[in-house]
Image (tube, rainbow, N blue to C red; front, top):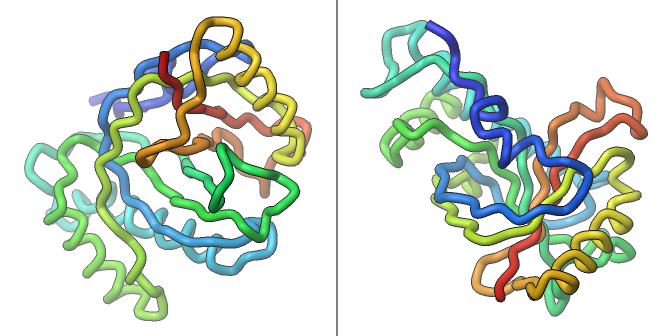
Length: 210
């Protein structure tokens, strides 16, 4: 049976063009870890990513010991994502990375419930007792109406792509809407450990309203 790859099945959500476009994002299930600080220097961010992958692969590999949840199907673990914000800033200010607040997250299949999350957390705790899972959580996120594009290149060059999004919104009668749990959103399609900065691919998504 072919594995479900969310990036391939839902290309409109994960593989936009480099030109801004409008998308309506449905509710999804995530494992998430909240934190703060510059992701380039912050140990908390590195730890959050390790925790998210540990939890996600615990669910994915549960079939190997016959503990798979009801409704389980074969799938590819979706890419790492992040919601980013700062106090009193609409969107984000790249000149103040130490002020970043973030929610790192990985999408989960539809069969994943809060009970499945708690079971995965217990399994990870037993296997990796040094992990601090206190900030890990099960999250449903309904993003709604957004604009997005594919940013190609270094993370430090993202402000140019963000400017494209702002201009597109203004030219098409939309307003960016960083309110009520709506954030600057990034989806990381490349592994920076294995990919040159100029070749990185990142989906950048901003919430909008009319």
